Image (cartoon, rainbow, N blue to C red; front, side):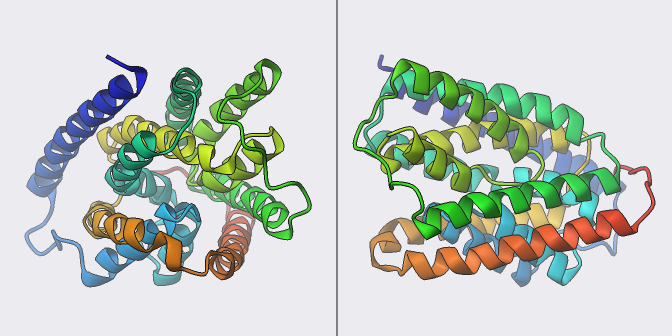
Length: 298
């Protein structure tokens, strides 16, 4: 059995375990919810899931756009956004990972180790973020999103080379990549995607930018499934929004796979940059303008 087969099988198994965990949580939440409480995603939730995961499959990312949209419609509460992002996007990102791991060339051993580093970072990050106050989450997400915006500007401005053609890191570069993926795995639990910094960093390290896709999507899928299960277990997510991201997101991934080569990605990336800056700035403003308050699980 090859490393890629092991990764694919492990991803599928984690996906099934995540579905079972969410199903149990949904049953428990519905038992305690009032009879008048909405139980299914609204059309707006499905639309958000479709569009954000469509963009995600193009390598643009989904966390920034989803966060900005959530804040625009005022749902869910800020402290529930990280868990909702992770839990809701987990299965769509799993679909992306299963596709890209098996169609894009990258060194299998390094791919597995990089994903393992992201998982470790995600597990540590979820344990910390899931117990933070509302203000801490706002400040953390705001700072992380604006940091991601810097990486996006670097990539869009073409200040640095677009990258090499190698599919394997040199030893010294691989150490840097491992450390970076650990940090990005932790940041994923703050609601900031790993796509933009991964694409820029891999290019700077001399790797073919296309090789970043299986690494960042495989890392994102494992972290989302593992960390998402922790958020779900603690009730730190908004059920309707998360279900909307999932049910609308998977079709968005499928459509994007077929249309990815025909869309004006440069224009879309600049648009997303504006969204990232908006989301980060509004979160920082909200966090700095409110007193520190405790968060109560829903």
